[in-house]
Image 1 (cartoon, rainbow, N blue to C red):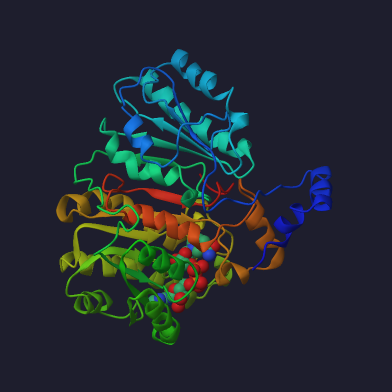
Image 2 (spheres, rainbow, N blue to C red):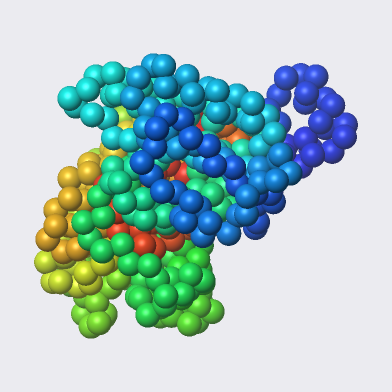
Amino acid sequence: MADRYRSFTGTAPGRFLTRRLGLPQPAALERRALSGGLLHLTAGPSGLDLAPVLARTGLGPDDAGRPAAVVLDATGVRDVDTLAEVHAALHPVVRSVATSGRVVVLGAPLDPTDHHQAAVQQALEGFTRSLGKEIGRGRTVNLVRVTDADVLAAESTLRFLLSPASAYVSGQVIEVGAADVPVTAPDDQDLPLAGRTALVTGAARGIGAAVAETLAGRGARVVVLDVPGAEEEARGLAECLGGSALALDITAAGAGERIAAALPGGLDVLVHNAGITRDRRLVNMPADRWSSVLDVNLASVLRTTDALLAAGAVNRGGRIVATASIAGLAGNAGQTNYSASKAGIVGLVRSLAPRARAEHGVTVNAVAPGFIETKMTAAVPLLIREAGRRMNSLAQGGLPVDVAETTAWLAHPASGAVNGQVVRVCGQSLLGA
Ligand code: NAD
């Protein structure tokens, strides 16, 4: 559904009127290529050798004084005095960051033996989130906590955050852990998923279809799973992508076993995207509306994940990406069932991630979309829909491709050090953390 308000603010009278009224000014987000160079700054003493990693982002150094991306290495900030270097580094340049530009702050894990270090490293979180809220013009600000001195572990994350693929990801804190599973650099940067099989549930339309298209575009052989009623669409998409379709209700008994049987070579990427809403306030919610949402959005994810891992059907180096929602983080009136199911996904990811990596060599992460323009959100009443679109730092809804690109980063063979993360794709929604 077209965002008429954003189109209106792009016209001269629209800009004039909405500015006079103090209304939001959503910038057109750049999803193809960032224009400008990269500025690398440091606050405090840093032990990271970032230069080779940044050189591979494809962004040259900024020599025009108008950077498309700024990376501030604040991993060495250990006290309030050196925290002032964060202000000193960014204060003079923040105004000049290009429209749709990127600011990435690198932080260190909080040191449990040094409360001064922990205080100022936590301070970076408040700093980053506030800058994301004030920077405007489609620019994003994110914090990456690098828990391993081997910065190569963070390379895929930096490449994502410093690219147009992360257009709708802002105000996030992402932890990149120790690379205790091999951080494999793919042979082909354009087709990092070549030779891998990806299964996407609920992929006949909406976000799932975009995920399937994006993963296929990165070289994966994609299996488009959807309910038997959507088989025609699933088959059509699978044919376009050179993949296959699997008509299966994910809540059916033995669904995990059927997937394993359909994929004798196993799976490398499993995207739990299928989801439904059956909104009602709790006082008016019959048990069937509760159970159908919990079954599709959470119980089936638990069951199929367990069955596939137990069967050894997720190959080592594999990636599981589940779909949460900001409703699961913030809560939403009329959505006790949906929010419970999506919060459940967060719990699942946090608990399973370390064990899945240790026992199966598989990472488990979640995307948490905010307001994404799909059939699901087109059905939302007009005023609530408008509020959903504007109540974020980018003042607009995201597109299915924004969730798909985030999934592709988490599914990347070089993202082995990203595990147990819940990454919001919400333009830094005002709802929730
Ligand atoms: P959508 O309704 O457009 O598509 C969902 C797909 O899942 C459909 O093709 C549907 O047939 C399929 N599906 C439903 N039940 C299934 C089942 N039992 N077995 C197999 N397939 C099933 O939804 P969407 O907007 O593309 O959302 C995709 C995911 O993203 C969902 O998990 C949703 O909760 C989540 N999400 C969406 C938004 C948003 O703004 N659109 C926001 C937050 C989270």
